[in-house]
Length: 380
Image (cartoon, rainbow, N blue to C red; front, side, top):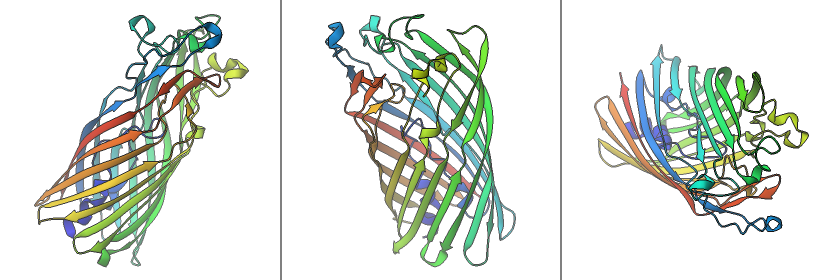
């Protein structure tokens, strides 16, 4: 079971991070911290979401609706690095670099055959986190882990179309805001319990929110201002156990408090009707359950299911999906000290209705995403 157990946590995330709740693309896993001995890892891959729909009618304006939104969710790539060092029998540490949050949303412009209501609306978000962790393992199979997380993030949003009440300055169509690079710091804390004889482990990890103060430029405000944004706190419960010879059962439950993620630029939020800011998101809980199997001395594989319940169908145009159901197939090839994990994921994204001012502006149906990823690990 040795190679299978070492690879089990990586199998959970070996396929590409996907369009999850809010703008999450990776689960901020601490899998590298639980690898045996010293360990280094490189991960990379990409995802190709398909999120399309048609805009809604506005009877009072005589607009029949039905114009295409275009494929609003653009494909993306990712890369990650991790290094874990075993200082002694009890103490280990790790450094993890990843890209947990991101967005690349773009509605087809109206003058290019897109929606009159939302055409031209777009959002980009980029982030990178650097996590430094330590783990202390007690002699009774319990362990504790924790550390600090630094995050660099930036973003830009453009609102366009008649859903925003007409062109500037009387409406918000054509509004643009840029959030320059900003650093923030948070922390990670958790614990785990292991039963090595049956390859069992259960861990609980809390990630704090991280506050960013962005230098902000709005095209309806002279000069710059500061926008304070919190990335959401989260709690992740992960577990695994051997259930038969060379067979492993694993799973996770992840809760993210997206309701605290608010983007309120100064000029935009000066109107009381826009007090919630540019985007309003619901909290999410994501469930994963899978089985891993060692086939030979070199090959292991797994299949896992992911389920994120849908919430309110009325969503932000900048996050136009609502829950997901997916399957991941993964394989690990182990040769001496090298472990190569590969995976492919398909997820069906829940139907959603982008809205502004509590009014439906489009209907997104039959959305989906494919993702592939590779992790190359080296133990020494």
